Image (cartoon, rainbow, N blue to C red; front, side, top):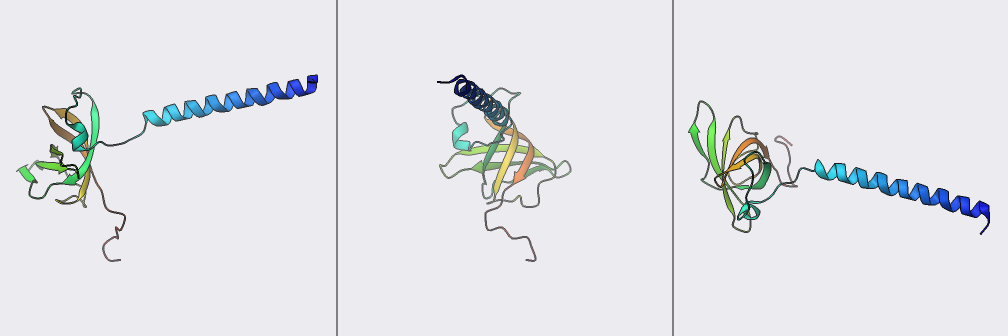
Length: 134
């Protein structure tokens, strides 16, 4: 191998190693900022720290939505999933306009004594969603 070929091999190898390192760093940062949710079935049997924030996704169970206090908008409802898991969720505040029983929801908050105390609700819609009036 000539010195010229050897130098090219070193340059190409260095660029490849730098590209792999940059990609690894990017994937590490992206994975720590990834916002995924778990289902009520996945929560069963797991323990969480009180300070740990989690996201739970599922369907708001029919006839489970109960307003504890209409003035403070405090409510309790259950989130279910297709595997039969159920989780009681406490929330206080204004709900998204698409939030209702029988519809998808993602609740973010902390677990305490097997119940989720949510600080944020996100209403989900199906892939066939159309805004009103369309």
